[in-house]
Image 1 (cartoon, rainbow, N blue to C red):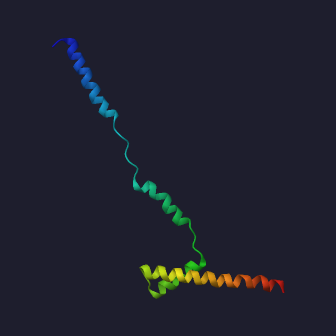
Image 2: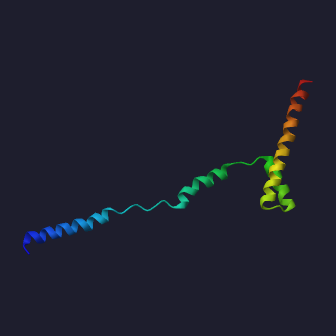
Image 3: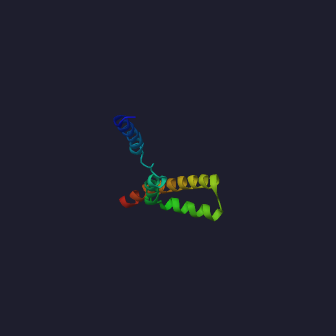
Length: 96
């Protein structure tokens, strides 16, 4: 083998080896990076007084799972209906 053919073989080998080193990808994003904003949204959301009261009632009854969700949904609906009925009565009392 001549000197130039050895030099060409070494150059070709070094190109192949360095090509794979530069082809490495970055590490994928971890799940905690994407989950952090979701947790912040849930933490900043404040619960209404009706929601808290319905949760207390559900706790007192020992409700869990679907039964708890159903109870809270109906309880909040009733509480909103009760407060909506009371709201128009207050301006009428102010007009007298």
